[in-house]
Length: 157
Image (cartoon, rainbow, N blue to C red):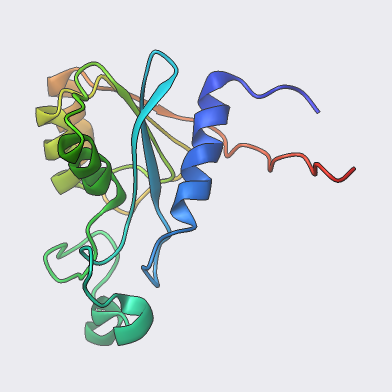
């Protein structure tokens, strides 16, 4: 098996972070990186200490809300938002950083990433909302959608 390039490496880490998600629809993970150093991580789920969709059920499913719409009707904080919040809580600037995420962002996250001065967004999955693209273009945030990285090797072999 070939050694993964740096983007595949951090996308794999984002996929592992997504395993912590408490969302019933999408498991999303994000990793912010600068100079090959992880700055923060985030996954989508209910605000800290509050019940999640795992115990309450998905409000969006109950109301028949399509993916990519009406973001305000959701219990979850998005993965990118949580990565920004974690960096802020620990006094870490994300200026000039790259964010690796399992899905492309919604417009709300794109606005926050713009204000956090993220330089590059790398993903292997597409979220059902492309409203972020013109904003990223105006803000100069480079977008790269890569193939999904192959699973990690089995260390028992």
